[in-house]
Length: 453
Image (cartoon, rainbow, N blue to C red):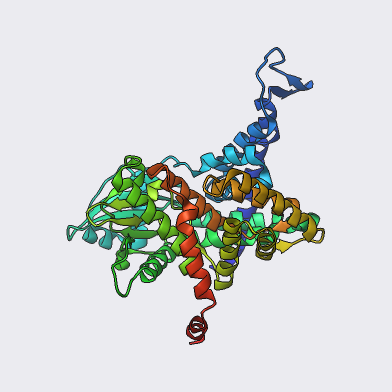
């Protein structure tokens, strides 16, 4: 068996390399030129729209072709594109904007393929014994998985989250190829810190294709949100342990209304906005373990209990206590508009390159805070602050680890959800007491004693 695997591996790598090369040539240089109004033929590159007055920005066309390339290449590259969409300081704002289409749902595969995976994971007898009915039309489809509603034989209504066929093998082959390419690029361009960024991406992707990891995430979220003296305002789905495997997780649905379906600025919507935003910020700064994809479709509000429910817990972020302390200081420095402290704390988050100059970096931060001061702290959008912070860091060759990017993305997403529910809500206003409490707790000597146990 090992011999067969040893022979198959290089063949798989070679075939996948050929496929990637073909798609890159199809949607890369040639595709970009066509989008700009040029055509490659026997006479070389010729203009095909020379009489047209339509302007077309190169970055925008390149971004569209890159997004299409990633879709054609499958789940690993879609995940890569999603990461790049969050890093405009790497690829430029226009390209990042075009890549955001990769967060949308992807076409569903046939139910027969899903049923085949279920029977393979559980065994045919278990499938017949445990499942009374499955809705053949997919509830949702993503790059890695597909969900279907079902009823168990005991009458329990569940949601089946099933990994699409061949995803795990393809992801591992792609990561292997990417790692080889990154090794070469990192040697040629050490200032970009590509290997550090890739390692974060690789580890997160491998965790996401093992649904036992999602089950562990659910357990941890539930444990973190248990309150000793009062009931938590946040809930998470339960799952069927006996039916959950590496490629299938069986979840019980959360009964409530999607926040995306709520009426803006209603009393109920405002309550949902405050609870949802507080929950994500507490996950980040209190627990260091947070939902990394809290968009409106993943949040449900249960009006009868006044609770927020989170679903789709495969993509999470982790922060060590020292990480939380550092970023808490960054956020409080923005609120206090303390230039020197912000520069110092933000610099401590990243990994400086050989050409990084702290004085130049500090000057860039000072200019950013001048902008905050002119706009007013209550009117500034976190998205704008973060974008400028990353640009200053990138310009000065300061690499910001992807775990912080995930955290910031979560803040931006929950800010967007909260603003849709309550147009006057201030995420910074909600964050300040949570940040202050987190910072005080980080210096509490009793916490050191707990960590030592």
